[in-house]
Length: 423
Image (cartoon, rainbow, N blue to C red; front, side, top):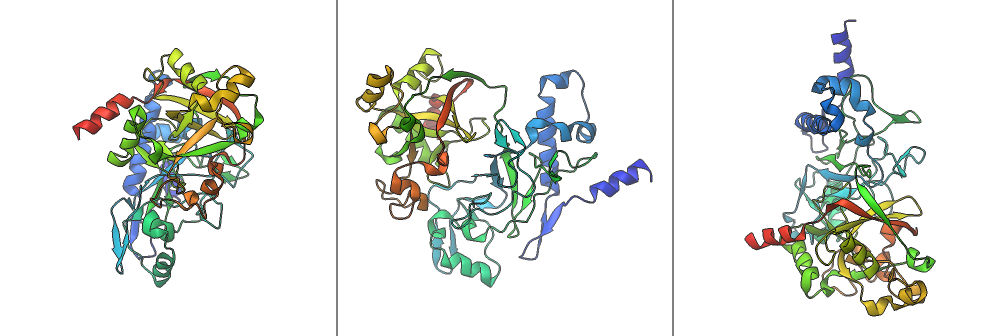
């Protein structure tokens, strides 16, 4: 068989469209082209690309399957083509999402053997919906779906779940395919683990209700980020414990300006678990807003990172489980509350005393202190995090083993404040 015929035969195996349960074709052709173009552009931006340029066709034929940093890992950020922040009205019920979020985070459950940056690689099998009953791979987007329910089953699911009124219809309507579909590659399906293909920034996942799930960040911690390793407390309680601060408790200063962005332009948002994060930082995952003690603030100021108070500096936190997250200062812990740390260790690493000692205090829509009902996770009656006052869904019971200060990457809050004032 001629080479051209072989190539055409290979390409036919890849899905370019899908028929939704509503009966129409979800055409992925343009999305495929866009993802391929973006992958090629990332390649051409690398320094080594200046030494030997490949055409887009040659790149996918020879290099793409070997591109290590294109593969998704635990914590990859996903978007969907059918999310909307607009309200929906169905059968006299208004679905108005409080603090909508058009991103969700991938959890890897099908592979623990092959890792990158101490994080497990995702495979085509990591495609199960994560909900209250099942701790699977992909939480529904905290948004409405552009598409209305199709079947009696979907209508029943939507009307039975009252949380959809404030968390979005995606919660009830998301129906994911059993596997991800990978970007066509001329020489095969790329890297595998136990004969199961890994997924990359070019992979897509069809939702049978009508959307296409697309990666936005791989979740990998790029080696290009320079980082200064900081000290951490020797207090095991302070490293394993966390606390939650209500976002509405902030009343003044830079902290309040940051909070105002949450409701004005979405630069700050609440994720699906009710925790506050900052978008558009260029990092693999969006940093959490936290309150930290003076030692970490001073470290940022001494390195001339962030503003004069250290706001804008970003820290990478590594847990004993291998999980890594980014955090940025949304408030400074009161020195009165960090006295135990200073007395015992000579530096203000943490706040609180005894069993209440904690290094990080996460901002959330905390129902115990906030009258706005946002997330079951933050519900005083049902949410494990709010009920216990801990960020368990983030730490997953692990302890902090390392905190690093990123160099060369920071949040320019002043420019974001200026943008707010011009709108």
